[in-house]
Image (tube, rainbow, N blue to C red):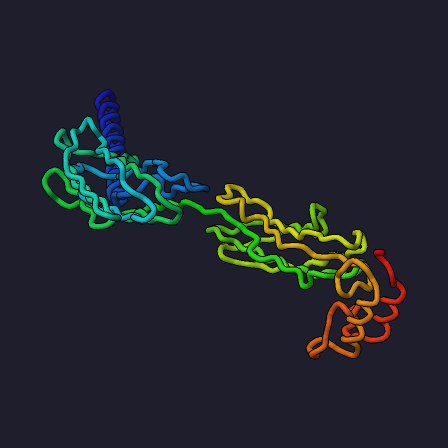
Length: 336
């Protein structure tokens, strides 16, 4: 009875041993089936605004590697945007030694671990590279000509994962402001075109406001502008609410976006619009015989005719006729 129990216990132990061993071998096989990876970390580095001379660091990392003794790689970058200011070999306890060469836009690293090889299933940094920002833009950090060797000089199969650095440029501007007339009669509507443009690298959400002097008369709803896109808004200013015989300055502004690089171009002023007394054809702030003479010279004309005078078309119906003369007479001697 004792012998049979001992035998069963032995069988159970052997069974557990083989099951555990098989599980461990499967785990090792599964780990080995995953390729080593050489990668840039962080994979994406983003700056919302440019600070020339600002420095940052990325790491060259390795993941799931066994017996790494030597590595070599090239890392390319946008040379107009970034410059290299420092390279540090890591796993210092493994005594890394090697060469670094930097040519415009390319870093070349060749490193050997004198103090023993590296085995890790986690992501671990092999080198730390410091860059200085010179300009806006997008810079891929591209790994090429990579080589991982073990302690007996055999190549270690691996994949690579690149990184990217983005320095965004945020800038929207009012690029054109145009009143379709710079003389009008009180009570008339002045049509004004405002063109805004996204000069930056990212889509922005903006709104536009237009003023006479400092009085707001037009405000748009929020709208999006993609990079490089321009939009022209058509605005109307009803002059019924202002005093005649005055010049009114026209101003447009586009809202400031987050991290805006240049706010000086968010506002544009485009001269003055003169609002006149009804009937003041010659713009001398009086309605008198001189205005009747100017009206008479343009009588019967339409836009495009040699004698056309838009200011003699006082009621704005597109023709200079008796109706306009009546308005002059009704306001005769105004302003005196």
